[in-house]
Length: 262
Ligand code: CAA
Image (cartoon, rainbow, N blue to C red; front, side, top):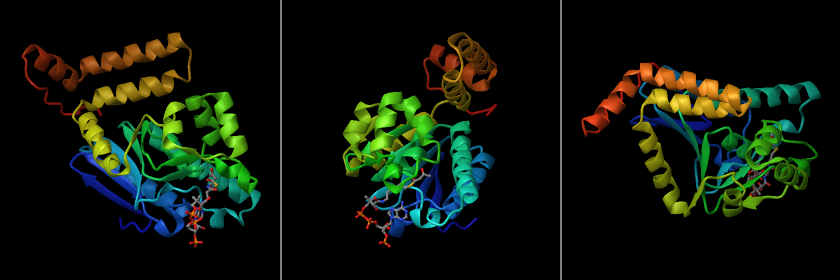
């Protein structure tokens, strides 16, 4: 498929989706949602892809939020539909069996912070800015921000950020647990790809197990979460990657993971 609002490419076994509406600082409209969804179809059909990275084209912005020009004239029902479409896409990203990294190169405001939070973790440029400034527009986050932010940084911090609309820098985002790491702007991409390739070198079954157990485990009590983990552990034992990884250790060589059972 030809894309107009994103750039989609697969570099070896790492898929990269770049938001590409620089004139609107990569704001998200329904066309962006549809194109990301189509790229996810391609990724799901390509068994060679082991990691997905999201970033923004240009130096200024990851995503400056949902497109305000689009939202300004929505009826309540249309607003609900737009919110549900964004939420569904982010839930789909969260449910992907492969690890997903947000490489936040600039503004990640409103829908931008929401998009980044649906990824497994965030690497940020020193120039990145995060926030849920929707209250400045008389609205609230609509792509899952009230839910994921509270789970990531705690209830009170999430309320403060959403209620004030304050924009925070990358270092503060790291301190509150929103971003995992912060890099100088010119090192961000290289560092992100280094981590993406490290993760891509692992077995796909174990990556899926880690993601599933941590994400689903946080929704349930500890005992149920441990049952989930034991089942995923058993699946690794049944997978060629599990056999290969442990055999390689005992034979003092590097494992050659194939990613079956993905
Ligand atoms: N939607 C639509 N257009 C946007 C946009 C957005 N979210 N953010 C920026 N743009 C556009 C601007 O309108 C401007 O377009 P023109 O050149 O045609 O005027 C262009 O991008 C460049 O923006 P600025 O001139 O404003 O650039 P700046 O460097 O002075 O400021 C900024 C950058 C602080 C990010 C500022 O653009 C801004 O505050 N943007 C809006 C941020 C925001 O409120 N995001 C939340 C949106 S609501 C949401 O996301 C809801 C949800 O959860 C689903």
